[in-house]
Image 1 (cartoon, helix red, strand yellow):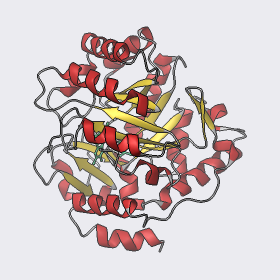
Image 2: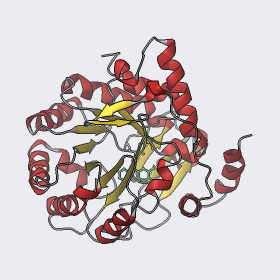
Image 3: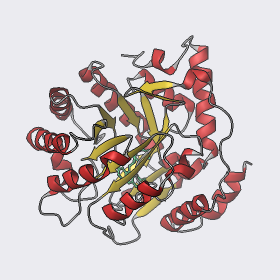
Length: 346
Ligand SMILES: Cc1cc2nc3c(=O)[nH]c(=O)nc-3n(C[C@H](O)[C@H](O)[C@H](O)COP(=O)(O)O)c2cc1C
């Protein structure tokens, strides 16, 4: 049994959100072992003119207010995404709002963007000794009367502190937010955000739902190609509930993530990649829990991958394991680098 499995036995007995709070505290106190092993050279990957030592990232939602980005990088991630950040602080939905689906190795959450708000995030990012690759994911306050303006405010304030910015228009837990994925609304939102950061050029990507239909993907990709966006993250949690789910909590309201999302999110990634035709990089996210999962997303068109939920079950040693397995899979199939394998299945 690895050290994390002993810790997980304790954490799994706690309310899931309390366990998350403890994990953040442990990271703040430097109690979580770092990944000190250098990354295999084959895992180095280029994105937006930078070289990352590996393509495995932490997805948004773990560190919403940028409290521990550097400690998270030390776990061995090639990139860490903080947020979603909203302009004003807010509590989010009432607790409980985060559920482990142990039998399915899944998670359901209906957090609703709790966070300390833009000013605190700005302060935390300003204080951070800057290294590694840290993205900032932005959203809108629940009670906002002009959601697009919320994205503009966050983007303008945080662009200079981010290695990339993400417009999250796909959280299912803020009513109406996903409407921003519609063709006209999306074009308007992204154009306004682009205009807001024109003086601080930073890669701008959009994060979409794995529930997007083929027609939705046609529209989203057309808008992104038109506006020369820098990337798409596919994707967020799903509102769907596969019939295979066995856990008692499977009918809780919210977005489902983890293992039950792996196949769906990779399939939607593939469809997105077919439409994008390598005009910009894609980030594959959803149910990554092994090197094989990461490799499947890369072969389906992802330049980078991200994960969150499987970290709940496997803990920090997962990051090293995924990297080692991915390097072995690339070598097995004769790929000298991650870049050579991107889109191999398309
Ligand atoms: C507890 C929790 C909170 C999340 N919060 C956010 C968020 O604030 N912004 C966002 O873009 N995605 C958020 N996500 C979605 C994840 O970033 C990711 O897209 C999704 O969980 C699929 O990846 P996974 O299966 O590896 O978890 C959250 C996910 C979880 C489980």
